[in-house]
Amino acid sequence: MDYATEYITATLKEARKQQGLSQRDLSAAAGVPQSHISKIENGAVDLRLSSLIAMARALGLEVTLVPRKSVVAVKAIVSAPQSEFVRPAYSLGDQDDDG
Amino acid sequence: MDYATEYITATLKEARKQQGLSQRDLSAAAGVPQSHISKIENGAVDLRLSSLIAMARALGLEVTLVPRKSVVAVKAIVSAPQSEFVRPAYSLGDQDDDG
DNA sequence: GTTCTCGATATAGAAAAACGGATCAATGGA
DNA sequence: TCCATTGATCCGTTTTTCTATATCGAGAAC
Image 1 (cartoon, helix red, strand yellow):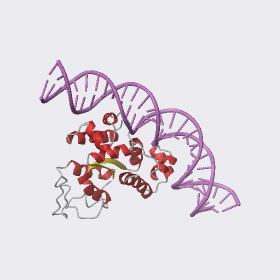
Image 2 (cartoon, chains in turn cyan, brown, blue, red):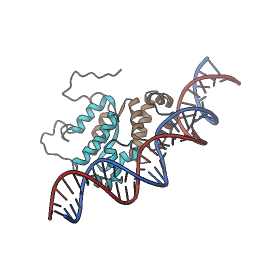
Image 3 (cartoon, chains in turn orange, brown, red, purple):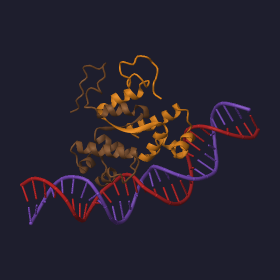
Image 4 (cartoon, protein in one colour):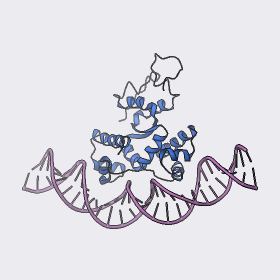
């Protein structure tokens, strides 16, 4: 399992746990069997794009392709506390305005 | 083929053409048969993550998972002319030219 | 001690990707 | 015209995912 694959599966697992979902919860939401989710999270299978998208979607994530040179900037946005980077300079308070 | 899948395969094809590569060129670089690349670009197969990553890597792209709420910001970065958006205020002398 | 949830694992079968190699029509250049 | 390149398509074979279902040990709750 190479780094990119590991990043994907680890991100899926992280997102799931962060949302307080069990593998069975995600299974119900994504339409992927729990047994298969277990294998995916453990890197035991080379999942198909449709499975990846189904799981990502159920977790509020989206699969994207970004140029290598933009990866750092993208990860900064993603890992940011969901405000400062998307918010322009004129908004100063720390209220979050996303629905 | 749903929207997310189409986005992925279309992005791959775009990137390939933009770089002036033929399917055979990409095949050699990614280790994926040209016949398969043709099917992938036409949405005829549900490719595996390893194939996606191999092709993306050969094209200088990376597969990432981004929260839905960050997708707009990420796409702004990616589709930007590769300067102003990727270069936040705090990084000033950062030349990235990759060859 | 019983019951429940959790994640990991097993089995068996159907479906599909992946691979290799070959071919074909269209195109463009020598 | 001849030749090379490009992308699409076909064939046959192998490998693997994916599904469904069930089970297991560990841990927590009652």
